[in-house]
Length: 213
View: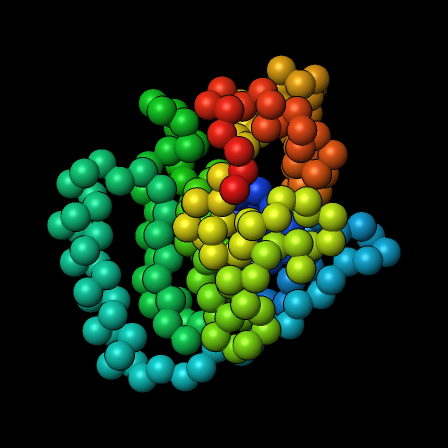
């Protein structure tokens, strides 16, 4: 049995703040709940995760065999270094770990090894946003400012953020020259506020001098 694994999924720029997603796999009897880990203590949000559905032993075996074949013939021969979990209906059917956390290290990767998931979060965030769209809870062609008051970039819609076609300035290259302490990690809220409060500077100092819309 492994503990519940919680990945707080982030997408690029402002969309992440409003449409944060919690992705969890549970292979044991640990309570199927999680708490957003960066929320203030007095406003922490508890999210109830659905219980796994039942799948037949035959289906689980079929999936496990297919995953094992992929793992053995595609991943391992290419020097796979990391962890892989495949689940269906909330049930983990395949789980493998291989390699070390550091190059030429001895810290064997296991179920508790932390990884920087980086841009993998974009896929999950896009999936969650489109699910909300499918449920009629948002319109991806509406401007982000409708959902995030103060986001002063007219013309930037949820769709253009998902498509990476919003035209927002690349703050990653500009935040340090504009005075950010590089020894400090910027939170989602700080990144958002940076875009809102330093908009004029971001646009004026952009290397390509491209407007946001």
